Image (tube, rainbow, N blue to C red; front, side, top):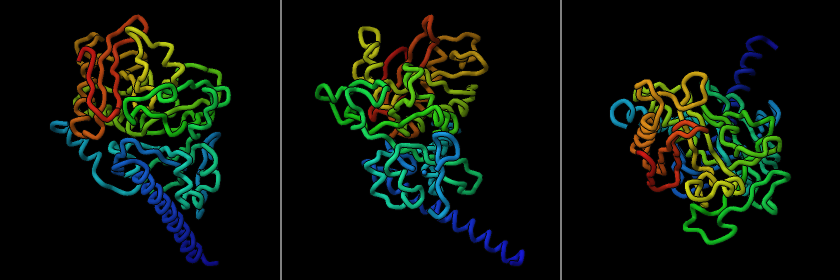
Length: 348
């Protein structure tokens, strides 16, 4: 075979592979839009997505063939239409994963062609191959169904009982989750966005129990990425947004319910809330964001202001914002969620 023929075949193979990846992403994109009411693809607020063969423990990859001013302008640019992969990357353009309940994967045959039967039958992390354009790999993560939780557990991992399992709930927003992301020692570092990984949102208990299980909404991760970008657009130094508390299993949340503590129907149980603070440097503590040389509630207000600006630019991400003061155990922090309606509390 001549070098020219070999080169043509190699180019054709790359183009064919890219076409299949694009086709598969298009099918997944359609599924994301279908999966939730009013599923605006460029930044679905609550979509779940799926996915693939192993490149690292717990991570698989698909088979070939098979605000005001500059801040608000930056947010608007993040929501502009782009390629299919850009759309899956959310309003921030920084998402690197989508989550999908098992009941939804079976309705899209292309997933089986791209990722094999395991994508429909086994919870896991499935990574797309290189789609070009210098984009980082994208992950589809299939969930364990809610029915896999038996007597408050999946395997040896304690989850407990959601409010809807015990009593009537105020709205559909407080219904049981569709399923659980299975987090293993091998896949816990999977990037779900540019600045966040699966492990960042895990409940802080049962340290030695694996696998662990997680409920998480992509819209929350997208909003946190937008908040981080907004801080920077405001001229606030913000190296990292630390998740102090992400998902809380009902059994863990229940331990802190009471006066001055957690609420029984906390949004943390539904994967759409996080308590966060900004870290600059090596100290794991809220940083001085207002530049007055001290760390106090005023710095948390700066973070809350960034979250307010994100909601103004993206009203579909509206939710709760609460400012909390420092204690001996932690510095000041801000609660941010995407519950779907505006809520404010604390020393705003």
